[in-house]
Each structure stands twice: as C-alpha cells, then as structure tokens.
Length: 159
Image (cartoon, rainbow, N blue to C red):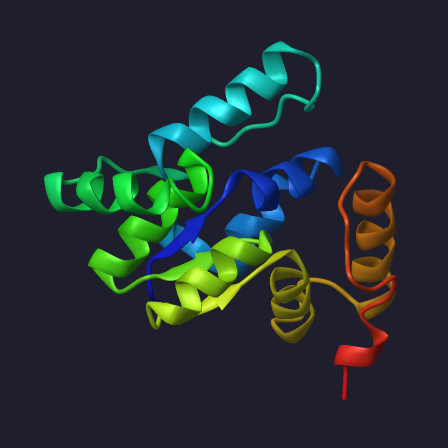
C-alpha cells in the first residue's frame, strides 16, 4: 500500500464524527501526517474546536531538508500543513488526501495522486467497511460540523 498523507481538514472531518478508526481502516499503517498538521489538530482540540480523538496510530513524519525547501515554495499558495503534506507526497511519491482546491490543483500539477474526504468515504464503501447509507450519514454529520462538501450524498459516485 502507498504512503498516504493526510491534511488537517480530512482528519478534522473524521474527528467531528468521532470516527478516526475509519481512516485507519481505509488506509492501514500507511496513513501519515506532518508536524504542522498534528499541531493544527492539537490546537483545535485545545480551543474546543475539535473533539479529542485518538490519532496515536497515525504515522508522524519528520520532513527532510529537501521537503522543507519545497514547503517554503508551496507556502506562497497554501497553508503550512497543506504545504508540508504536499512536499512529502512529492518527494516520497505518496498519495495526498486533501480537500483544499488550491492544494489539490498544486498536487495535480506535481503529478501527485489526490483524494479527499469524499474519496475516503467511497473507499470505505468499496472496502465494505461502511454501507452507502452509513457513509452518507457520516457525510451529513461532517457537513453539519462545517465541512463544505460539493455534494450532499455519495449516491452520484456509486455506480
């Protein structure tokens, strides 16, 4: 399985519905994130903006000097957490799970495979960890918590 870099928005969406284990089920031990993303999560928890959930299983990565250089370039376009995830994904040929449009476009320009919250929910359906109605229910809860989803149902994506 390919290394998968998770941005704050993806992790926050699953934290808001108290389902961090679903991320683990979908991505296994290749789910990873960066120091800036972990700091953003902890800051959100400390401020009461995010529920506290257990992310201890999530692989925390240390950025190389080359990755740090890319972060500096990407920060002109996206925030630091997104920039770190993208830099690691570029350098380590990993998949990037991110919802921010500017970050997705930048990743695609760098030939980095991209997915997001909806893709992760669809993967959970395909892997038979969730039934479609349960995934839609989670999507609804995520939207109620502030996730700006482009759809209200996963139905259109299911063949």
